[in-house]
Image 1 (spheres, helix red, strand yellow):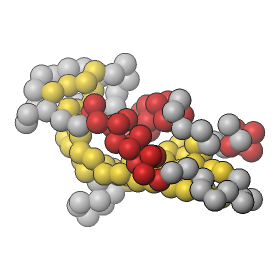
Image 2 (image 1 turned 135 degrees about the vertical axis):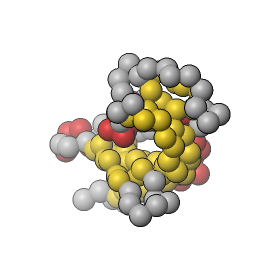
Image 3 (image 1 turned 90 degrees about the vertical axis):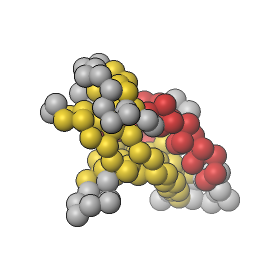
Image 4 (image 1 turned 180 degrees about the vertical axis):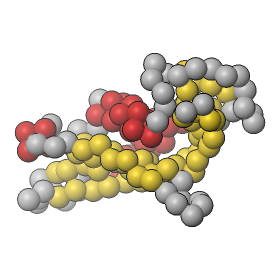
Length: 132
């Protein structure tokens, strides 16, 4: 068994997928695992600040693999790959894994402000990976 803690933040940025630029109110989650008898897996306030720092450069921009100019006040941040929710989660993982010991899962919830939402999760799959 392991003890886990999940922290979540909300932020708004855009992305361009299948040629369509649009924004979402995103929820970004990170889950950290620790020892079963740990008093604290990770300071929640610290993890929330790391999440904010990670996405802060994206706020006010749209993520894209091709700059199509300014859109409704949003400017492009060009990535090598199309900025699907899956790619955004991969980029979040890459940045968070470098900063947060015990990371076991990153999740991105795409918009809960309408009549639907999607969540994409990226998690360590094996016990050996989870011990990292």
